[in-house]
Image (cartoon, rainbow, N blue to C red; front, side, top):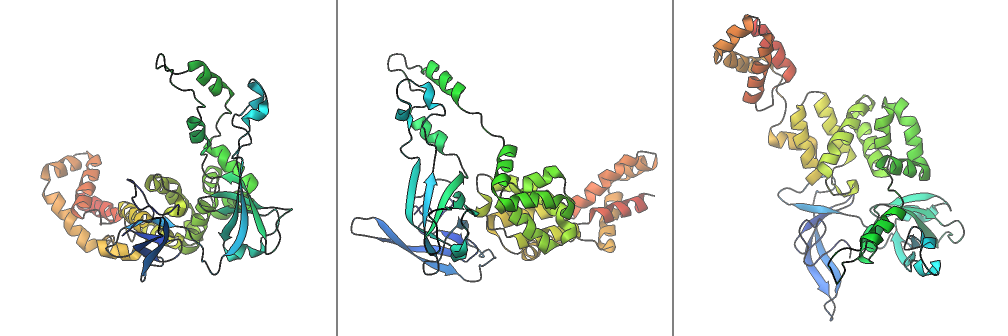
Length: 390
C-alpha cells in the first residue's frame, strides 16, 4: 500500500495506474487494473510483467521506480516491533509537572503479521539485519524462536520524529493576538534538543551495530588499496558496500579504486532524493561500465552519460554504448584526418605554436575532440597533434 497511489503527486516514484515499476531484483511490471471493494477501498492490483527485464531496462517504457517485495507463498511470518523515542521531549524532566506526561504513546508499534524473506528462517537471536527502506533490526533474544520470529527495530533509516514534533507544536505556534511566534518556547526547545550527528558519525554508528560493515571497514583499505576516507564512505551502509563489492567482482580486483571513485563521486550526483536501493543499476552493470572506461573503450564523458542511463533505467552498458554510438575511436588513421583538418583550418595558431606558444596544443586537441563528438581517444589525439605540429 505504501508503494501505490491512485492519484500520485508530482515526483512520485512508485506504482500507479498505467505506470511501470521494477520489482527489486525481478521483472518490471505495469499496473493494468485496480481492484476495489464495495466501499471503494483498494484491495489489490492486477499487473503484467514486461518480458526480458530482469537486469535489463524495457525498451521504450519509462520505469517509475523500484518496489521491494516478498513472495506471498514463499515468505515467512514474523512479528516486527517498531521502537521509537520513549518521551516527546529530549529532556522530559526539565518540564513542569509529572515527567510521565511527556511519554510518547507511539514509542512502540507492533506489527504482528509481517512477512519476511524465507532466508531469515534461521536467523540467530541477537543477529542484526537491514530491512531495505525500513531500518536496522535485531532478532529478539528472548521472544524469538524458529517458526515464531520477532524482530526489534534498532535504527531507522530516516528520522521522521522532527516532522511529528513540528505538528505537535514543539517549535511554538503563532500568537493569536500578534501573529508572532512564541520565541521563548522555540529558544528553550532549541537549547535542549540534542545536537544532530554528522554523516560521519552515523556511518561509524552503523559499523558499531553491523559486524559486516565493521569487517569491511577494517579489511578494504589493504584488500582494495583504498584510503581510510574512501573506505568510510563505502562502508556506512550495506547497500553502498554491496554495490562496491559486486562491481569489483565484475570489473576485476585491480579496478577497485576506480569503482570506488564512481560510487563516491557519481552516485550521489545522480541519486538525488532516492535511496540507493531504489535505483535499477546493478553492481554487475557498474563493474562493466568501469571496465569500459578504464580500458579506454569509451571516454570519461561518455561513461558518465551511460552511468546516468543506468541509474535511471538500468540495462546493459555494452548495449547502451552500442545504441548511442559512444564507443571510443582509437584508430590513428581516422583521428589523423581530423587532426590535419584542424591544423589546416587554423594556420595562424600553427604559426604561433611553432613560434613558441606550445600551450596551443590544447586548442588543437579540443578541436579534434569536438569534431569527433567526444569519441576520439584523447591520448591518441595528443600524440598525433604533437607529431603534426612538429
